Image 1 (cartoon, rainbow, N blue to C red):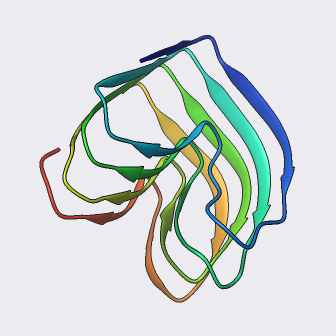
Image 2: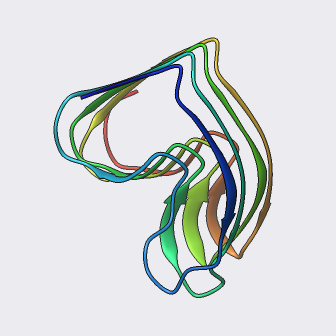
Image 3: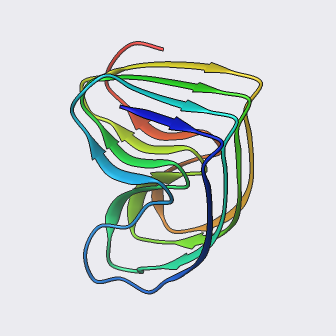
Length: 116
């Protein structure tokens, strides 16, 4: 799956999963030259990210960024909320997201169980 020059803006007030581009990745995916600018307000939710919520395959993110505010419970971050079982490669990426929660928060990856 390819997201090239993808842009996402807006607000997401969710009681289910929330992410900037894709909630769950289970096929090889590339995100290239893309950005998100979001407010995600889901205080009881997990596995949220500015780009991806849960990663269970191969993800390559290049020349991309996220910004905004993310409020959740745990396992969320500016790019990938939870690298459950995937392989993540990044180059020239950053997050300027403000995160509010209590466990498993990260600037780029909230929780990782696999390869970077």
